[in-house]
Image (cartoon, rainbow, N blue to C red; front, side):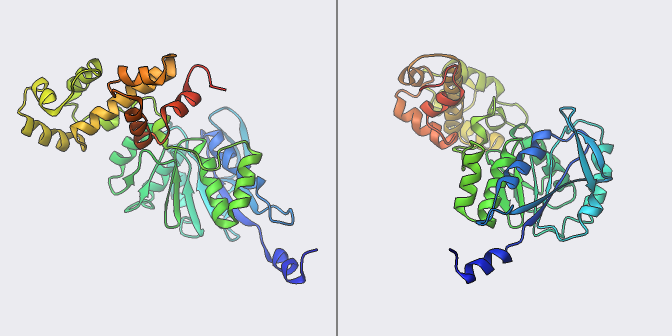
Length: 336
């Protein structure tokens, strides 16, 4: 039997209000993924820990990107009572601008009210257009990180993060990353055990190993200069992975002196030649692990790492997972 003090404490716990903002064309999983996670969270006495509201600018039905129609309440109605967390879902960035233009105007009235503000996937663009992310670190779906950085230079974009917290502002990567962010919010609000129980119930990683890099099809944004100056060199590297790829060799291919090459390369790409070669080798190894059945040590040799331990260190550093773990997740057949 709980003590009187504990019983009083339980009765004093109030469900936190979470408002998720949708609109026509919003990603269905951006909305439903976090909602499901929050709805699974319970206080010790079994009561729901969150009160969930799906809102849109005008209320009424919205048609998500899948064609599924969801009913919503007007945002001004949802904002009448205290909001603990306000989350903006993502959607098609190339859709009609009018879809989110008036929504941004409406949202501007409420972004300072919640204790916590966040976005899921490309919802970060809506927050960025409101100036909410200026001076902060943020993320979005890996395919749009470069676009967000160009669109809003005042935002420090982290292309590898699953989610980012900057004070009261949270941003998450694409689609399912909204669930990762919701789990972290539950852990912050309640405790580790509750968040872990929610993750188990949803059959999810509580804290997903690695970052977005392990899911992106290419790392070209990280290994190409803004003006494509070294694209031909990168193609040469990909074709000669098992050979000696030192700075003097690369400089010779680029028809530059080694000293000038190293300096210009860092200036144009933001990373050293050695770092770029390592990334390209990791990308090549990823494809071999995804599509073939060669042993890991053979993949390491074909990708130019020389041995599997050197490749393992590069994978952990860049992707956050080992080569074997990567193959287990993304290979043609999972290991048992």
